[in-house]
Image (cartoon, rainbow, N blue to C red; front, side, top):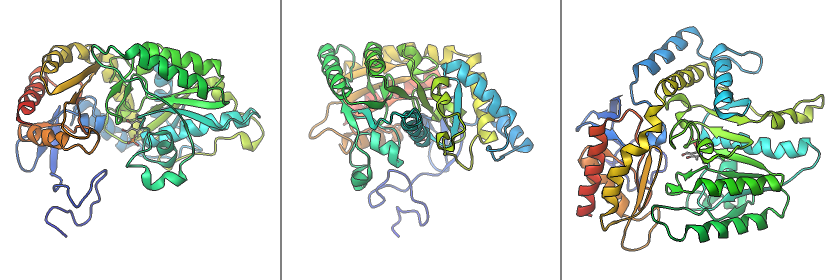
Length: 424
Ligand SMILES: Cc1ncc(COP(=O)(O)O)c(C=O)c1O
């Protein structure tokens, strides 16, 4: 054991030969994380894009505590409970998809959406096999989710176990992008070609690919994708694991983009980021194909913690908070804009972009760009030394803070990045 390695824990996405010892966090409050050593840190990425209302939120904590004292867990195959029922009614009202299937995280929410889409065609007696996904996509780390994600360093050891997927370019855009029309029309051409093969479903991250580098697309592109998907009779799956619950400035990115998916995967902000839970929303038309006397029509899928009451209570309380203060997410873009404009004038900044609560840019780097470029880790360290927790994706730097971040805290994040750019 080296001094930098914990004897028992195996952290995610971490090469332990090189990683620094993880820092111990003792508590959180609002946008701040408190460590057992060092100053508090502003959590500028919402702890992997989950924390919505801030750490240690009293109303969230109370709702979870009250629910724990009442009913912490019950098998969801033979029973139901009111937190789940309430959540079903509220989410279907908000996203326009009537059926809610529970699972445990973002990857499982995507797996369930893929399984539903494939079985839907089988149940109708006209099996379709092709799934269409986008370059740069990230949908999670379970096998089905990996299969539809971009094949890369992360998925390489499993390549032979991943089902084939038809790929379409993702026309990522940014401020003053002069090539966008050409990129979009090239992508749509590829989409039209792949859709000539009977397709079960098209899956995408609406408006914003997260792990793929905070890569944003225009709403009209998504509308064009939806139109072609409908024309081909395929189902449209929106992976809103990251983009849901206000992250993109509206309740859902699909809603902001003006598209209506058949299936939607949700997680992360679902419980305000307090507890692990995923849901897959499905239209009633999709659901109906699973109802009938033949046992083969059944969706034979479930998880031990399906509809965990604590998760449902947290989700209902998070919705209360969002409904009470919609301005918190609707107005976030305006908070980012002037500071991102200022950043965008720095010579080390290119491709500034913004949607809702998420602001991003690419560092101008020496050498090969990509996830392993060292500029990101350098900037991360400088920010950490200045009380800001960032986690660049290679040369992509982004801010994705909790809604509760104060103006001075947000300003401090931008000031820190600006100062760090001069030190790189
Ligand atoms: C768009 C998207 N889908 C799915 C996932 C996977 O979610 P989880 O990490 O909860 O399995 C993520 C995680 O970052 C994501 O960003």
